[in-house]
Image (cartoon, rainbow, N blue to C red; front, side):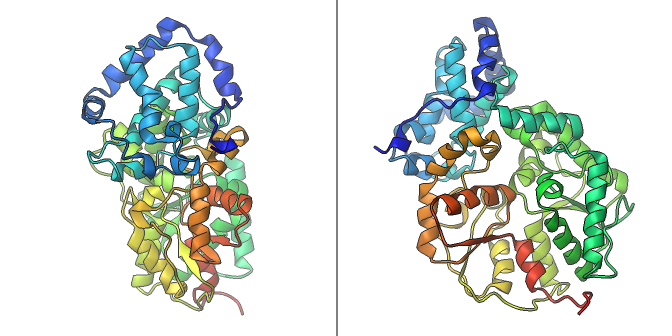
Amino acid sequence: MSEAATAKRIADPGLDQSIEKLTPDRIEATILRVINQENSARLKTFVDTCVHCALCSEACHYFMSYDRNPRYAPVGKVKNTLWEMIRCKGKVSKEFIRDAAQIAYTECNLCKRCVHFCPFGIDTAYLMTIVRRICHLLGVTPQYLQDTSHSHSATFNQMWVKDDEWMDTLQWQEEEARDEFPGLRIPLDKEGADIMYSVIAPEPKFRAQLIYQAAAIFHEAGSDWTMPASPGWDNSDMAMFSGDAEMMGRLKRKHFDTARRLRVKKIVMGECGHAYRSVYDMGNRWLGYKEMPIPIIHAIQFYCELLRAGKIKVGSKIKELCTFHDPCNTVRGMGLHEMGREVARAFCPNMVEMHPNREHNYCCCAGGGVINCGPPHKMTRVHGNSIKAEQLKATGAKIVIAPCHNCHGGLEDIIHHYKLDMKLMFLGDIIFEHMQKPGAVE
């Protein structure tokens, strides 16, 4: 067994210091509340159905990367956390809660690949979110993840971006883009526009060029669009992953309310997977929405619609060998794998598939809030995804296309650590660089 396969406790103030405030009564009451009052029917079905066959094990990249250590099997993670809480009727120690939090937050990406391997379709990701919910209510959350959740609470974005900084960034990108596209605007708070474009907070904070690129695509496609000038522009949701369901609901309501205020026809989201999950699977359900109050589509769908309608046209093609990474939330969650490939192939005729692929593709190991748990837990996920490095290397591709921010974060670390000779791109990067640009100066 490798050194990396030996599970160890990772120092994290959010876990180590928080458990000192716990009492046995509080732990028991919190566990019983979450199990009996928030999750009774679905949870009972999964617990009663599981036959402990462990067929889910080989679905997990942690299990495969950590020398098939049973600790990292999906069923092992449930056994060492939720099942014990249920068996003991909530009477577990604060040390147990500390270890359960490390497993649930940092050793499971909630990617749902194991659902496809379970003969009964048991959703281990759902079971891990129950553990996270318990830990959140007990105040035992990784420090870095909790910081992003606090930022959501204070600013409605995950990166502490102030309102004036948001506006300044959009104006800066518009000014930059007008050197290339003289007629380009980034409309703000335009009521009645066809589209409200929303992004995740790391874009104005660290990747402002992506806003430039998106504005250029909207401009060249002749879209009637706008961005919000006030909170509601960040569609991301770290509260969903920390277990703060109440804040998750506030975030989604703010997002939808902003679109309602602007009276737009639909929301187009940037290339983020977890934000999409929050909108279509978790945040919307927590709010009790039967249908979306405003139609929402992911950037993959939007780009595909633009290409099919001829609103953007291919100007040049990439000659290098490319491969397409299937993000869990847009593929296992929403089935956008063929649309993603359609967009990619329009610009990249020389494509090779990873194996396995589509809904069976290996996770990036960054999603589920794991990358947001920060530097203390970085090497757990990097070592926990050597199987992904092997998968990428086997393609021989020079470019990996990944239409998801978290996937980019995780794959960048994998490519760097395992010294893979690959370049990582968003679909938006490729479209911007290779579409026809009749509105641009020569």
